[in-house]
Length: 493
Image (tube, rainbow, N blue to C red; front, side, top):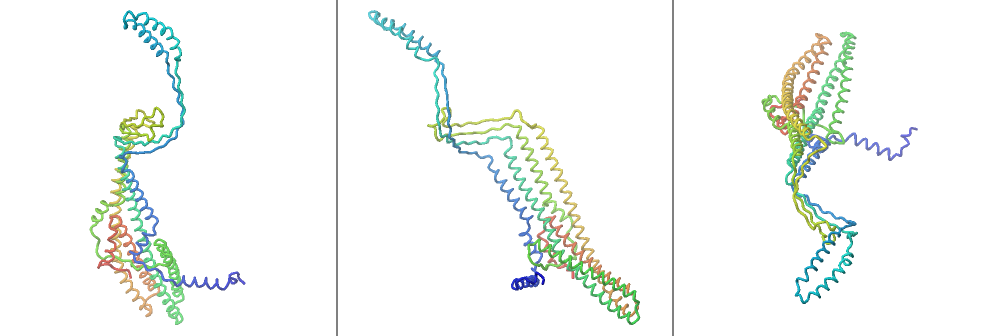
C-alpha cells in the first residue's frame, strides 16, 4: 500500500476539502482603478520611495535651526594637584632696605632731647633685623590637592560662517526635491508596470479566446474533411493537412492557456491577492486622435520627475560650491560659559565667561582652491545633465505619443480587416462544402482571421500601455479614466 494511503482518514478528508475549496474559490474582481489602489498599498518600491521622501524632509527640517545657539550642560568630577613656587629673595632685600631707610629717618622726626632714646631703639631694631628677615625663605612653595565637582553650562552662537549654514540648508532642500523626483519616477515606472500586468491579462484572455475559436473551427473542418474522405470526394493528403493545422491550433491553445495563467499570477502578486484575479476593465482604444502632441510635451517639460531630479541635482551641486567657498572665509562666533559651583572650583576657572571669537584656517590638509574648482565643475556638469534631461523627456514623450497614435490607427485598420477576413472565411467555408474551393484556401482564410484578431488585440494592448506611459511622463496619470470613459472608446470584443 502506498504511504499516502496510510494517512489518517481525518487528515486525508481535510486535505481534499482544502483542495476543493481552493479550486472552487471565486477570483477577486478587479477594475483597473481597484488594481491601482491595491498596488499602491502592496508595492515595496512605492513604500520605499515614500519613506525616502519623509526621511529627506526630516533631514531638511533638522538643519533649519543651524543658526541658533548651541547650548550644552556638562558635569565633571576632577581630582587635581597644583604646586606654586614664589621667589622671595628680592622681596626680602627690598623689605630690609625699606626698614633701614625708615629707621635712619626716625631721629629727625623726634625732638633732640629724645635723640638718645630713639638711637637706642633703632640700634636694637637694626641689630635684630637680619635675624628677623633671615626667617623668610628664599622661595615660598605652595602645593594643594583637591577633588572638585565642576558643573557648567556652555553656549556658542555662529555669527558668520562664510555661507556654510545657508549652503547646508540649500543642500537639504535639494535633497528633498531629489527624493520627491525619485519617488515620481518610481511611481511612473510602477504605473507602466501595473498597466503591462493588468492589460497583459486582458491580452492573454483575448489571445486565448482567439486560439480556442480557431481550434474549434479546425476541429469542425477535420470532421468535415474525414466525412468527405469517406465519401471519396476529398484526398487523404488534404485530410492530413487539416490534421496538421488542427494540431498546431491545439498547441497554440495550450500555450495561450499557460500565458494566461502566468499573466494572472503576475498581476495577483503585484496587487497582493492570494487567490485568482479577474480583470474587469477591458482593452480599449479611443477612435478620436489625442490632443496635440505639444500639449503633452509642454506638460512633461514642466513637471517630469526626470527633469525635476536633474534640477535638484543641480541645486545640490550649487550648495556644494557654496560650502567649498565657505572654507576659504573666516568664521565668527560668540560663546559663554557659567559654572554652577564657583565655590568649589579650580583656582584658575572663572565663575563665568563671555566673549566673541574669529577663526580662520591659514593652512589646510587639502587644497581648498582645487576643491572649490571641483565643486564648480560638478555644478556645471549638473547643469548640462539638466539640459540633457529636458531633451530626453521631450524625445521620449514624443515617442510615446507616436506609439499611441500608431496603435490607434493600426487598431482602426485591423477592425476593417477583421470584417473582411470574417466574410472571406464565410465564403471559403461555403465554397469548400460545395466543392468549389480547396482546403488550402479555407485554412488560409481561418489563419488570416485569427492573425487579424490577435493583431487587433495586440494593437489595443500597445495603445493602452503607451497611453499610460504618455500620461505618466506628462504628469497626467489622473486623466487615464477619462480616456476609458470617453464616448468614442472602442472595446476589444
